[in-house]
Length: 194
Image (cartoon, one colour):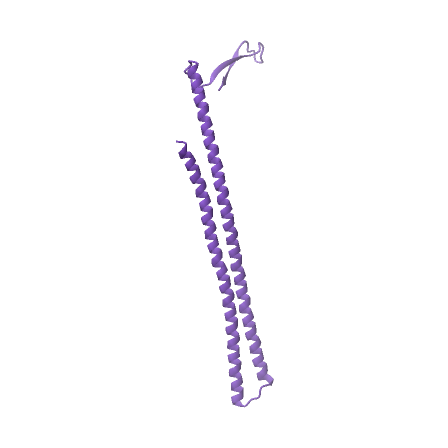
């Protein structure tokens, strides 16, 4: 019968350790997803910036072709407009990269947080398992000690021929002094000891 409490303690400790391991594994999965989200966000920003610059080059080429077809020379206000459009396209590209970098940084932070949470869950799982094991062993020892004390007390009372249980309190009288406040004389007070 001693096997069952030990098995229960072992199962409880193992379940806490396994729970910590599973939670760590889940958090690592979340971290991998967030890391991939960061990479995709940066990639998306780079693609958006490249597309913006490509569209600007195409628009500038169309403007140059229109100017050439109309016989206008490059210079003056038309060149200023094309340069302004090119600068604006560069800024759109930079803004797209900046926004993507911000999203990527947030995703990386979430990944780092998930990794830390996973490690904490793993440590807490093993500490909980150790605590359960120590508490279970202490409880089993205390139960064994109580059982041994109860058995030795029963054996002692049976050997003495007194069938009174060892846990039954015994009444003893303690004499009081002859003079007490309130006029009490020669009385005793009953005290229980166990």
